Amino acid sequence: MSNTILVIEDNKDMRENTSEILELANYKVLTAENGKEGIDIARTNKPDLILCDIMMPVLDGYGVLRALENIPEMTGIPFIFTTAKSEKSDFRFGMDLGADDYIAKPFSGDDLLRIVASRLRKNKLLKENLNGHKKGITNFNDSTKSLEEMGILLESNHVKKVKEKDLIFMEGDSPNFLYLVVSGKVKIFKTNETGKQFITEIVKKGDFFGYIALFENCNHKESAMALENSEIARINKEDFFKLLLSNNEVSVKFIKLLSNNYSVAEEKLLKLAYDSARKRVAEALILISKKYKENDSTETTPFALLRENISALSGISPESVSRNLTDFKEEGLIETYNGKIKILDLKKFEAIKN
Image 1: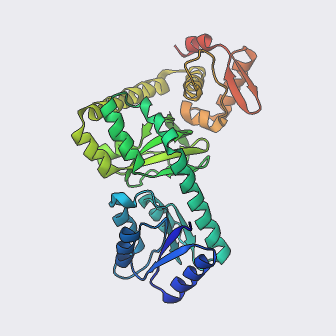
Image 2: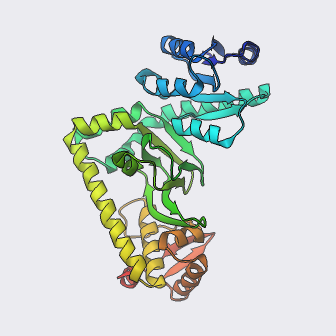
Image 3: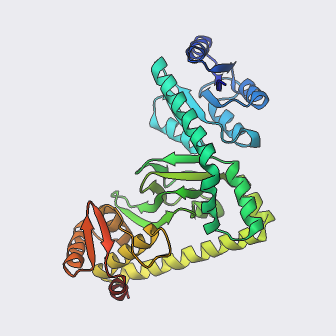
């Protein structure tokens, strides 16, 4: 059975050429000449993928995406912008709204088919594996009722694959989603005026992030970047707040998360002010090791992390990190191989930290 693709494009020649290319590749194609018509067709036919121009009369592409995000049966459908505008800010704005990809006009038939096939393939794989991924949510809540309700939200929202070093959101971005790490790891960091990073948190499978800006109703004050290839679930903020208001257990859990965040931040400030570089590097390595540990074993797990990230986490220069890592290695506290670090004596590291 062929996939159905909806093409929303106001330019008749572009609309017909795009449709012809897709039909030759054995896709079923639906077309709309403006955003309002496109929404009506999408609701009636529920396509497998939507290609949408940005600059259109009646309703532009951004408006189409916003409208579809609020229609439950439309969530999860890959959405690709097609646009002649090449400014990165336009693409960035579209991706922040929830678009899955974009293709700049004029595009070749090969580029169009490659991007469409890639997005359909990824969406199919995500659907097939979603049930397995949802178990990561149990790290957040063991309450049956709350777990079921959060599971419903996860089913109805996007799970996106992000590559190592991909930005998930940036300082100053508008908060539109609550994020959940389905697999992989993400660093949360702030950047000063010289571009130097300071990592405030590392989140792993089963952890939520991005909720502080939602609660404060302000733009993100931090950025989030994948430390490795990861999968991130995005829960629409309206759905999230509806659940908070209707479920006391979920509300209490997030209050605890917020309280813990502020306590940890306060403790970090004290350590930055008074702890030695040696202590701060030791604490960073302990934190990273715990984040990378995959089970309850007492054995530490080797991890690969750039010295720049250890520097950003501990708040000292990469050169100082390198010196302390050399010292730890000579003291037999760590070993390094194939770009990975492993803590050999966790108790001694805890003693250094304390």
